[in-house]
Every structure is written in C-alpha cells, then in structure tokens.
Length: 189
Length: 388
Image (cartoon, one colour):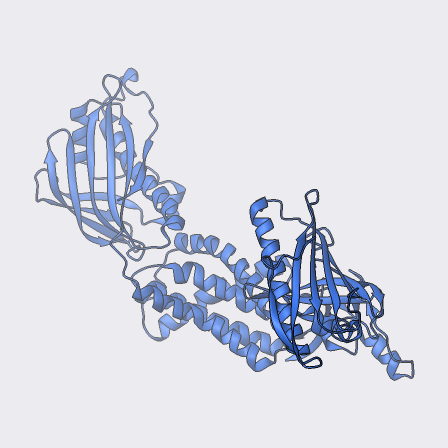
C-alpha cells in the first residue's frame, strides 16, 4: 500500500512540542473481497506518541462518536470490559436510531474491537466490526504513531447496485477520515 | 400522568428492574447490571440511559385525550365536509394519520395490540361522527354532509393511513423517550397532531384546484328494434323493478321521470326518493342521440360530485333486431384524492346507469315478450369511465 493523499488527504498542523510544522497523513484502503463481505481500512499517521494517542482512542464516547453516523455511545454496564454491550445511536438523514454491539477485544495501550449490529438482528442492516489498533512509527517511535481502523462487515442490502454500494462505503470512509483528522489536529496542535 | 414502565432499548419488551433496585436497597452490593429476558441486551437499572421508560397516561388523562381527539376530529370532519367544497387530502389522509399519531404517541410498547387498535379506530370514527353531529346541531349547521355509503367508504379508506399514523406516532414517542423529553414537550406534540389536519386543510385550500370533469359510460343491449328503443328512452316515466343493493345503500332511489324530452329546450324532472334532478334537453337527433344538461341537482351527494351533462346514444346492435344504447354521464369531481374515490364513483354511476337502462329495456321489450325469439337475455355491459 502506498500513501494515497488523493483518496483522503493530508493537512499541515503545528506541533507545539517541536515548534515545527507537522503533517497528519491518512489513507484509505479497499480490500477486494467476495461479495457480500466488505473490508475497509483507514490509517492515520499522527505526530504524537502512542501513549498520548491511546488517551484519545481509549475514550470510547469521544472516539467512537468521531464518526459520520455515530451520535452517542452508551456502555450498558459499568465498568466497561470485554463483553460489555454497547448501544450506538446512529444519525442518518435526520433520523436517529440505535444499533447494538459489544466490546469484543481490549488490549490496553494498543487497541480494541467493537461490533456494530442492527437492532433487528445480527444478520440484518450491515453488521460490521471495527478493529482499532495503535502502533508506534518505526522510524520515530516517540514522536509519531499510527492509528489503524479496520472495518469488516457484511453488506446486506442486496438491491443496492454495486457502484452505489462502493461509492457509499468510500464516501463514508473519507468522511470518517476527515472527521478524525480534524479532531486529532484540534487535540494535538 | 401515572405509571412508569421500563423497556429494553433494543427489543422494547418490558423489563423489571425494580427487583434488583430493591435488592440493592436491602443491602446487596452495587448492581452491576441485568440482561433483557427477551433479547439478552445488558442494562443497568441505575442508569436511565440504558433502558427506555414510558410514562403511561392515567385513565382520566386517556379519556380526556380521547374526548379531545373526538372534538378536534369531529370538528374537522364537519368543517371539511360542510364548509369546504368537498372531501380532500386533508380529510382522507391528514385526519386519519393525525388521529393514528395521537394514539401511537400516547401508547407504550405494552399497550394496544392490533385488535385493540382496531376497536380504538372504530370508536374514534364513531366519536368523530357523534361529535360532528353534536356540533352541527348546536350551531345549526345542517348535519354531517355524507351518507351511509360515503361514511363506510371513508372508514375503509381511513384504516391504512390510521395505522401508518399510529406507527409514526409511536416511533416519534420512542425517540422522545430515548431523549428523555418531558411532558410539556410531549403535550405540545399531541396538540400539534390534533391541529395538523386544520393546517393541512388550510394549505389545501390555498392551492387552486382546476375543474375536474370525469365521465362514466354504460352500455346496454335492448332486444328491440331501434325505433322502439328510442321511444322507450324518450317516453320513459316509471321505474318498476327492484334497485340493486348498492344503489339502495349509496344513492337516493330513482322513482320516475316527468316532463318532456320531445324537443330541444324542454326540461324533464327525474324524481328520486328524497331528491330530484332537473335536466334540460340540449341535443336531439331523432333515433340516435338525446343529450341533456343537468340544471338542478338535489340528491344529497352534492359534496361528492356535481352532475353536469349526459346523453343517450342509440345504435343498431350487432345482432339483427337489437339496439345498443350507451348512457353517458359527465360530472365534476369534488372528492379527492381521485385515485381513491374514482373507483367508487364509477361503480355507483354504473350501477345507477344499469338500473335506469334496465327499466328502459323492460319498457322496450315489454310488447315483444310474447315473441320468445325476441326476448334474448342480454347482459348490461360497461364501456368504462374516464377523466376528462
């Protein structure tokens, strides 16, 4: 994979620690899979250490709502742990509705996974899983880290033409990346 | 408002968190949560965001709301059928959707199964009519401008929009409960639902509506020569046979005709039970066409359609010794939306045409009845109806 700025873009931001101009770079990758499987990955290169990035990523309410459709995330049980049910309020075209999932995996400091399923059942309404992982940049482990978000799911709207499906998923991913990039810039500048 | 019940955020089935709260109050450790017995979704009885609570109206509040619904619905029904030109979108779709929305919005997931909703819908419909009649009597407005048949039709038309409104109201309520909105907000929504038909009616009144003419054409084959068939139409006076069931329910029964049709300009008066129709002959082509214009209509369906003109067209039939008679009625449609009412209008006018043509055919064939060969039974046919 090569950095594809055309797909998602990059923006300059000022890093106060180093007093120099740094760049948050992002890219999106579409993995070809047999229909109806969907697999997308988004990667952001953030000019902060892994630990500082984890502070943001591990805050589920804030991180998971930095998404085009997620309005609110409710943990159904406290304290949150693997297996905790999540209610994710989605907003689309002025309508809001809940989807439900679980915290599937939690590796302190390096990532976690959540599922995002329809209220009608786990085989309806684009069931998908978010895998979120953080790793330090190989070249500058103290200054840079990589945030990787992988979405694996099953496209269930069989009536939607392939072209429209692809456009929709890419459009959503680009939007998601843009929101994340802005948030990261606002936080770490 | 009374009673608070708790429901699962995912399946909206009832939860019973009280036990765990009580256990906790009795000295148990902090509740770490429970699961919905139906879908298994976790919830925390101490965290209101993890479940939905629905306020259930007290019986008195429900009765008051039903009374308000009947008052507003009946008032609107009366306004729409009497004061306005005719039945429109606001009455046919707006009123049932809003009535359903009031029911749906005031429901909780536990209340009102389908059959209960049907009963509520019937009671509401009856409530609208009773309230409309009471208001009409109180203000001396002259009653609900609809007959039994129209009311039954309207009831059938109401069912689907009513259930759509019920679903819509319930969805809005669920959303408001998830957002934990208070009763001032919810009460405002109910008032909006109650007033919305009036607003829709006002908007509908602002939209200019072109004169919508339609026609219905019915054909019958008389087993009589052309001249005799023509005479039976021109000198037709009395209907003697039994009207069909639909006609007995839907329209005033045609009784007979007085006046002349011999020349252009003559008027004839078609007498119905509880009404009449005055026609003026506008076109007469001897033995082939008799056209007329309706100059006065008092048939108790003036709110639904306005009869304009019509004609009898007479042609030789396909078989020798028979005559094909086509009766056409042109009318102005006053009930909307047309796609709902047109089939009913067509059916009723075809039935009326068939009844009148049947009487004329009986007159034409009466003298021929002695000859068995001449009384071949021929079904009354329909050529159709169209909008103009």
